[in-house]
Length: 144
Ligand SMILES: Cc1cc2nc3c(=O)[nH]c(=O)nc-3n(C[C@H](O)[C@H](O)[C@H](O)COP(=O)(O)O)c2cc1C
Image 1: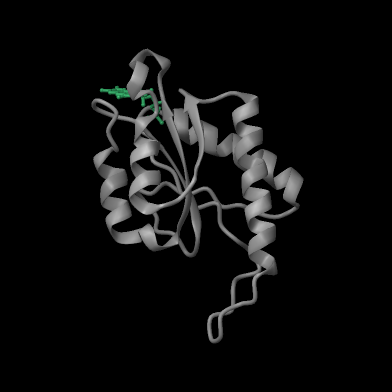
Image 2: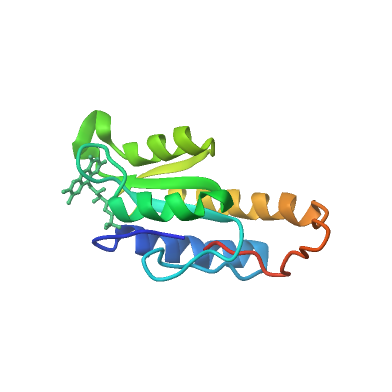
C-alpha cells in the first residue's frame, strides 16, 4: 500500500514491484491507500509531511487497517535534516513494525533492491507459515 502526494512514493512502489516480481517470480500488488483497502498483510510506503509528520491520509488509513501492517518505508527529503523521513520512525514505533527503508524523494536503485529483497524474504517466511484454520491464505500475497 502506498500514499503519495507528488508522485515520488508512487514511482518508488512501482519500481520495487518490478524488481520484486523478477526475483520472487510472483505478483505483488501496488495499491493507492487513498483508493483501495488491503486484502491481507502489507508493506506501507509513505512520505513525510509537516515537520517530520505522518500524512493525515496515512494516519487515517492506519486507524482502520493497522492490523495487516508488516513494515514501513518512508520517503522524505535530506533538506529536512533531523526530520528526514521521520514519518517512518513514528509509524514503526507506534505499531511495532520494522522501518524497512528511509528514502530520499523517489529513492535509488539500492533502495529499491533493499525493499524488494525484504518483500521477497518476508513472503517466503510467510508462505512457510501454516495457514490459519478456516482462513486459507491466497496463493498470491500482496505488496498492497
Ligand atoms: C509541505 C511539505 C512538508 C514536508 N515535510 C517533510 C519533512 O518534515 N521531512 C522530510 O523528510 N520530508 C518532508 N517533505 C518532503 C516529502 O516528504 C518528499 O518530497 C516525499 O518524497 C514526497 O513524496 P510524494 O512525492 O510521494 O508525495 C515535505 C514536503 C512538503 C511539500
